[in-house]
Image (cartoon, rainbow, N blue to C red):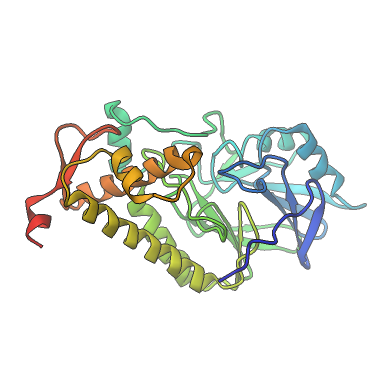
Length: 309
């Protein structure tokens, strides 16, 4: 497994990762972003910036200061529209003239199930969503984006968020928040969808990446091991939820407290949203049911089918 404990680079410095790829750490550390958001610079002349990051003037200066003589920015790519990844994109675009590329706005790619839940008004979410985000160009799944001496393939990988994309550059995959080495990704309905998340993880596993460059934390040099761990982690979490429900109906918060016994209090809201994502996924498979409408405070119980298994 990739060792992530030593990852503590300075803010603002453009760190070379391999020829043609550098990383700048944004100064926005938090329990959800760890050391901060990773912004990537791809190319040697006309560059692509991947995930410009939060609306922070100091980080904007760091990106522009990283340009060597003769270099410019020709493309701005965004993995997804969370506030720690996308708000600087239009500001950087205005400063450089480079257009912004992404799958779509903050609501793009949302599954039918999540859209129905959002429209019902019974499932509040939207933690950290950049609702103002609008790309200049919407990318399709598998589309090739070409620049000056580089090209990447855009992969639509919903789950953490509906408009999430990964970008594959010669087997080096800039994977946003789909896979990270220091933590599992938050899946918070209705913007996150666990069914989509698991599908996207399996797709990335089949992509055959040699290295993953996540939105937060260190590069992952053993992608197969890490993605398999993440899939197994989610499957184990589902088993834990089902085991807890054998004791009787419970809310997502009650289940989170029973399962995430070592989680700090400040992270329990995120843990509860992860549990809710599992519950919604299992409800769709008729493994569990609710005592009424599906919402964040509903009480869930095993279905008769699950009780018999």
